[in-house]
Length: 388
Image 1 (cartoon, helix red, strand yellow):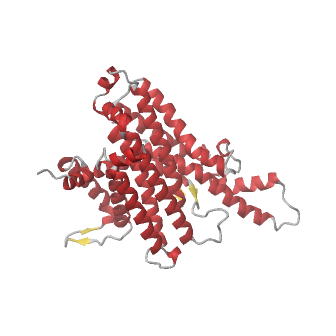
Image 2 (cartoon, rainbow, N blue to C red; image 1 turned 120 degrees about the vertical axis):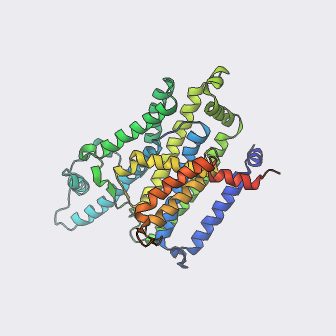
Image 3 (cartoon, helix red, strand yellow; image 1 turned 45 degrees about the horizontal axis):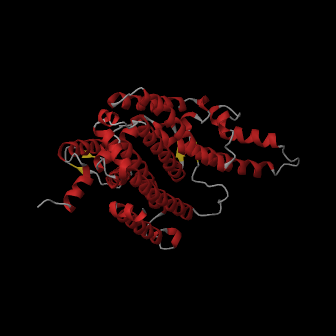
């Protein structure tokens, strides 16, 4: 079965091989290995890019293969980041508070330690009490379960309500965007329990590894991101291949005909929607410790729109196309907005790419839509399978 899967999915073998080679080269060139060819900040950028590639694959499966244009998958990505961020903030603050109170003559009680941790975390929003959603923040295992369960349950409930009502097309896209906007606006409130607009910060400081250099930590997270991307690619290649993949693509092309043939369309759509949401949450849990901070702006609807643009540019309906689009746009965005791209002096006006990057991205999206509707992945297919 494994051999047949690889034979019919040669791209999986090529992708895993190239990903492994890329991971090896970055590892050998990192500061953690002593060479210093690749800086720690660049290793973090590459690790974050791999996480974005993973959620792009999830978006490609739900949109490019199943035909559901979800404008809310970045919300699942952010939920995964918040879930792991809660444990990171709690454990790090607990260490600081415990060391501070240990200097007192009278040892503090557990209640005093908890109050001090709450004041340290929520003092920025004028509170010191732990909300209910922080009940398991002291347990890494439970918070890791939340990374999977919360996005999965939210997608399951939302998808069940939407698909059983047979909401499709642009109306379904509007509903997913409304869900994302509602969640973002709620998190902006100070009484949401997640520090409002301040979000969760200092996530790059891993509890228990205070003496470990950031170069080593960033490399470990890079390995984790590469492993997650490789496993995610194989998982989704298996899902969209074979009979199930044919049914899912049939739903995309003609949902009424697939339903007429006796297949439970809603069940397939719900499975794909929930599975991609879970993988998006895992990608977010790996991304934000490398970014160091998460706030409600990360879950805004515009982020999910960017995600759709990445997949469209890379070529939807092709898993490697989603990876190409996400990696290309993400790295170019870091280069243009980070001051890496030189300004262009036109004499009468100086083009500063930090201001014009979004315009360039929009023009690129329009050009791809008009002249290369299959995206960069489609051009790649054309070069390899060029007709006679």
